Amino acid sequence: MKAISIENLDYSYKNGFEALKKINLEIGSGEFVAIVGENGSGKTTLVKHFNGLLLPSNGKVSIFGEDTRKSTRTYLTSNVGLIFQNPDTMLFADTVEKEVLFGLRNIDIEETKNRVDKSLKSVGLDNYKEKFPRYLSRGERQRLAFACIIAMKPKIIILDEPTTGLDARESRKLLDIAEDLRSKGHTIIIVTHSMELVAEYSKRTIVMENGSIFYDGPTRDLLSRRDNKLIKKPAITELSHLYDGILRLDNFSVEDIASELASIYKTRGGI
Amino acid sequence: MELFQYVQKETILHKLNPMTKVIIMAVLTIMSLLTMDIIILVGILSVVVLMFIVSRLEKELSKQLVYLFFIGLSLLILTVISMGEGTVVFTLIPKSIPYVGGAIPITIEGVTFGSSLALRFSIMILSFQMLLLTTQPKDIVHIMIDKFKIPQDYALMFLIAIRFVPTVYMEAKKINEAQISRGYHPSGLLIGKIKSAYPIITPLVLNSLARAEILGMAIETKGYGSAKRTSIQNFKMGSKDILLSAIFIAVLPFYVALLLNLF
Ligand SMILES: Nc1ncnc2c1ncn2[C@@H]1O[C@H](COP(=O)(O)OP(=O)(O)OP(=O)(O)O)[C@@H](O)[C@H]1O
Ligand SMILES: [Mg+2]
Image 1: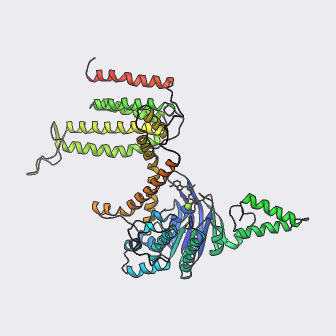
Image 2: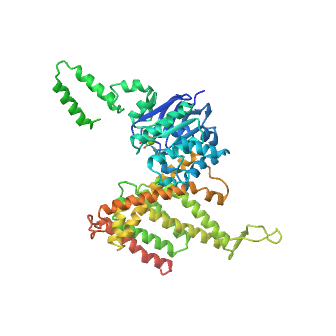
Image 3: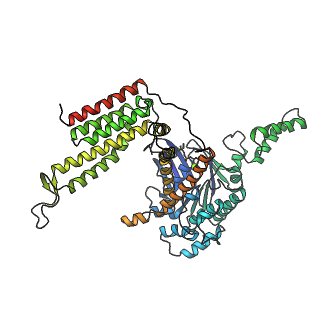
């Protein structure tokens, strides 16, 4: 059974804005999927349907075969973990430990100690148990938010722009944790603007455009599409395309290549 | 969340000098405070509603009416229950019941007084809304400082408060969604509900404080309070402003005379 399956999903906000149009999508257990697309293309609106924060205006969203309209809150929360971009929207407790406990209590988990320790260890915060969450660094707060969800052991984990505001090392740490969870059978969905991370971690990519799915398939195929202006490719792919283009000119000299590259660098702001 | 927020439209009321709107608002408020007569109050309320229609804010009005209806209704119920004196229409607890029978009488006076209170309340809230909805916050601040000589720190406080209503609302919504995603389900009776608001209120307050700090720095780096301020804009009263202000001010003495039965 598919972890997530979506049939003809439409969603309009209260003000009448059609944020999602005819979305059809299936995501299997244990997949690592990236969702990319311009600002306002509907990525967040889509992932909010996965844990029932939003319900479809038309169509159907099912989580392990259960229609989100008919599922209970507890069913959705224990199966789907959603982590938002800004960890500060959820941190409220006075210690890291209590912060993680909050979610567990909400879904009536008994064996709390073990779960808190394990989840904090998995994000490298095992020595922070007594700290005040707000005093942690941005990267640590994001990992704590992650731990709060991991402790609840949802089979599907969604990260909505988790790496915004994080440096390369912190971003990579976060995605390594996600990849580790995937290897243990979790389904990972990550919404991001960073094609470098997508190229490195996810085999499948979904591109959203104006509330519809513009592309859904292997990340490799997407990156090799030259026409695609929507996606900022990782620098190396872009560079190889450019190089390829220049080499195919009839008459060229080394100077030509050099000046061509220089001008491209200037206009695109470098790698 | 449109509450208190300026709505851009091209109507007479939007173009009026803010001072004119303050005068209209003040006159309507004073008029509603001077009388308990339901018919007159309904008349004043219709004027306010008319102004909403003239400024094409029917949508905003209808949203407000829902809230006002409930607040008005509770005002009415409270007054009716607590006013025992007067002509009794019936009693909430029938006379036939022994001991407590005949308690909580509903009186005509109670109903009229409650209705007037609810009407007054609606008039005041709506006419204040009218000012806020049709006037840019910065223009309101101008008037506060230049015409009413309110110290600029307080005027700025007012401006920021109004400006941040929707921001805080959006933030609260995001926090709520984040906590729901962690299985948060506020439950229980009143005390339980208040206690369980903690996971929402704490981040909301802390994030707002953080935002206030940044805003404070931004204001200071722009030199707030470092020199005497000068106005870029100078609000002139146009002919429409003068006419309308004059009409509303002139109505007032006649209105008082009418109430005192001087005619
Ligand atoms: N509560 C709302 N009411 C009305 N429209 C909304 C609401 N929330 C979002 N939208 C609109 O829906 C569209 C999709 O928003 P969404 O947040 O899903 O985009 P996104 O792809 O996540 O963008 P970003 O990359 O900026 O996070 C946007 O045009 C946005 O303005
Ligand atoms: Mg988003």
